[in-house]
Image (cartoon, rainbow, N blue to C red; front, top):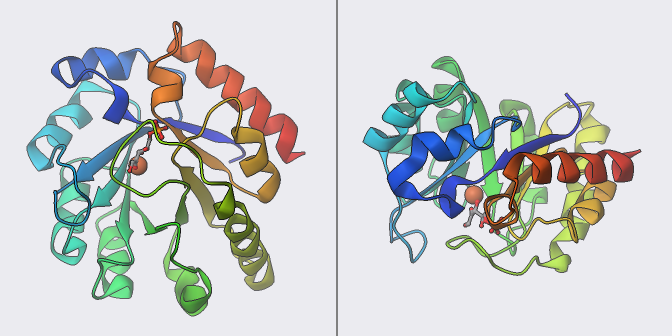
Length: 220
Ligand SMILES: O=C(CO)[C@H](O)[C@H](O)COP(=O)(O)O
Ligand SMILES: [Fe+2]
């Protein structure tokens, strides 16, 4: 698939979500951050809004569940219209079962790791997934500073995938901008979430193309 850009609607105007989705028509995915004020200290949106957003845009929805008990909720987000559903392994009680349920309902299944969570304990279950999300900020808020200390984990994740001959995507989320995206692409990331960098730009679609070009150049 190559490089993919996923603007996060966390940085959009929530009163105009359909327009904000249309403003990033060059995006490969629309990244939707679901927060429950328990797993993270912030509260955003849930199933009814995802269901409406899925009907309002042709861009596939990339759901990032920052919630407790994703085992219970993740399959419902596929039914609501998500094309990819990511659960946090720190909150998930049965990641293999949950990944299988997401896939069985027809979406891509992904597992997210907070900055201090290692990838190695999950080596044997990578084949159950379509994507690994490596957080490059502590989850909970947009507009935070990119954590360089996460770069070695991207490289280790890429090496594990190569070792097993797996073609999972590696997604990066948090602090991605024109200043930081090349480092992540060099390390092996392929899907780039960008909230504030895209929505604060005068021309969001031009920023998406700028980010895509920088990542493609660095990935070669
Ligand atoms: O998951 C997230 C926060 O937990 C968001 O997707 C992320 O922070 C995007 O915002 P920005 O690009 O401004 O860092
Ligand atoms: Fe996110």
